[in-house]
Image (cartoon, rainbow, N blue to C red; front, top):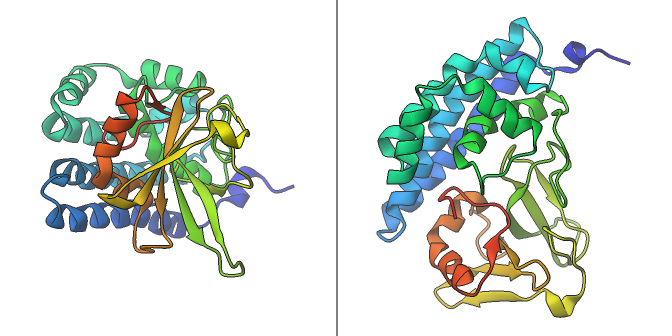
Length: 275
């Protein structure tokens, strides 16, 4: 069996793939922000956050050149901890008021203890949005390098990093007559197909307990709810607009999240807007 370092793709190819993915998301957010007055603020924030995360991902990649990543955050973090300030600085300057305050306070902390706890305990963006934002570049680089993150698995979680799915979508498969459903991880960006209808949060499979709602204002968006656990996931229909980047485009329909909350549902994992 090959060692971890032998399995790693060349540094430049990893850097190109991961950092370019953050830039594609940022560019999509900027393009949508130009056309949307209602969602301009969250989209502009998302664009800046993605670029800050891309810079952090590049620092993680540089760190692993001299010492391959292990997937144990406590062991890996010291090599790139100094680069975390870029994301914190952006959030402190450009985030919504609560996030600005949290980011400002955390700039004065040693990041290792809080982030290690989040990682070790399988943390969620519901409780700690900022830690998830700080750790996404690390998680995405790990997956690109073929390194398994050492963290507990979540129910219905990502098969790659064990994080929580933050978004769903439907897309037409090349060798299929119908659309396939997918989930996207909020922590590492990995995507995986959903084989059958079931709740991503509690695994409920009774169709009578799994309702989907749509708004005429947002025809490509579906709020997929579960009566059993009162959770929901937003799903973007790429069969209508294949250009959409689900975790970015969902910011255009934050009103559907407000509606879901009013109905007593809680989003399984918050999106980039924190809801």
